[in-house]
Length: 409
Image (cartoon, rainbow, N blue to C red; front, side, top):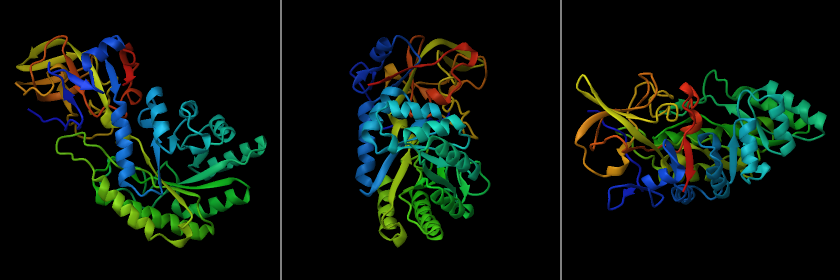
């Protein structure tokens, strides 16, 4: 038997043992949606998560939602009403962000491979481009000159450090992301001299970290780096985007990051910042931490079989919707996401089973030898921490299976 990750707080069962999501029975939500597989996102949990962040962080720090984590339109509209800005990474996400109701001036656009038409769309809308290279800067300046629009341009900085213990390192050393810190002052002076509206820095060192001290240390380094760059440039950055980095507990032994400790440390860092940053704004850009815990992936058992003494629950879902839960999205060693039998939620386990999907590949495994209550054909399996990097980060077209349904409740 192999353990699974911790089920997030806030989920319970009704008197029949049926998992409740947003106060509604999982089976009723499936019926409303028309079928499984189904992603369900709890709007109240999203609202509470934002409130939790605001209570812990200094009031002067803005909250931006990195919509790559989950761009489902109803969820995005809700998040746009709760946060101070949206961060996008493609022309498609830019269009979705504008449709969500977020003001263009509160949208920033990062990504190392922006095409000219995407640069133009951002410039026309008034969104901020987080420049990833000197070449991209020249293209943006040229497009702005052709249109007669002063583009809103920030510089994404590739710092000389990374976020210790992060699941995905975005800074330090040779990276496709951002401009090496040593080259930033010359580039920013070029932008200012060309008449662009310089919007500041985007400094993102890593993601999916659970160590509060490591995150706090990285934020302190980020603020210090922003000050050094500002002094070399001779100008105060309007905004310093500190990135995110706060992870969520997916696997056995993982614990929630101590957000109160991060907030207290950041308050101290900002209180002691260099005078050149006195009038700068600050933002944290979060995706996964905001939305992962509010999502549940529901999939139906279509077969129960035994092979060489091992019991398999074969479901109608799989890695084509939940690539991360299958262990094939950014993990080296496969470990189990939080999983439960939705119609026996909270019931003590009685057997060890492997939960597999409907694809003809051995990679399609959602639960590897996990202890669960007895589950049979037509029962519902729930995968938790499914609100981030699920539906849109998975190969839904693989084997013609098609996308999962999604709903916000």
